[in-house]
Image (tube, rainbow, N blue to C red; front, side):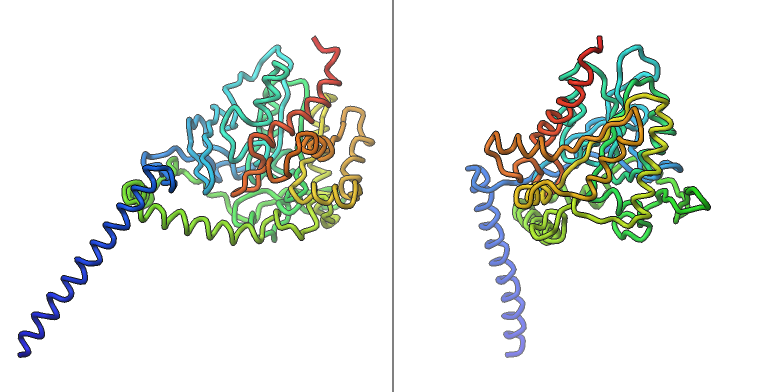
Length: 382
């Protein structure tokens, strides 16, 4: 009798396993059928070893791109963008240091680097096509004004150029200079502190160059192969990523009830660090025109529409141009907002929904605003 129970229990487990496999097979078949009729999207994950795009590899600025990267696929929950870098590690075409052309050096953070947008669609790409002049892009994700000054001093200034464009992002440029800011202080990066009547550079971490050159571990590659061939797992993985992104979005700068980056009141010392960094760039420009452009975040558009244009922080930034003969400051917000209204578009239409940076349309509208400024200034250029 006991033998019969053991045999039954053994077969019962086998039957349950077979039933589970049948249900999983039916579920997999259903997902594949829905995918075949484009009812359900199956995401394709990279399985080839990818070049690594960005790391803490520079002892001066910290984070910088690996050089000579081609076709790096940056996969986000809602899109994939493709990046390449030149021999200097800039996300830019190959450039010679010496040139007789009228060239512009461009400095900024991830918005200017063009995060989430493929090569050819970014602000600098569009301006280069419009004016048929090289716009040398030295933007890098995570850069603060301090790093923008240092990358100009260390690298960008070596390239012949007649003008400098520097983009200010109030949403995080000041936080990025705060050594207690939790998002960026995990990395080796430069900071400023008062030293007598001036400032001194310092680092909170020891430089340890990351020598990795690939961005796809063996375990990640196996997981991606599994995702591409097991559609059930693919759908579950996408769902988990979407839930995580939704939770993240509730705490990012896109939160509707946040006052907006233009309404920030950064600590005086952080504003001093920014102005000191900008001043060093202006000094090293040696009389060349330096044009500052201010980048709004989504909430700034809403604040403008509901309360009008009154931003004390922006007034302080605009005042930079009163101190120098070769400096102008232009806020992109009024032009971009006017163009949105002219085209009857929503604010969200110019931002990547799963990331918060400009999409292709955002770069287009920003380029139109910049072009209106430099086009007027360049009327007499050959």
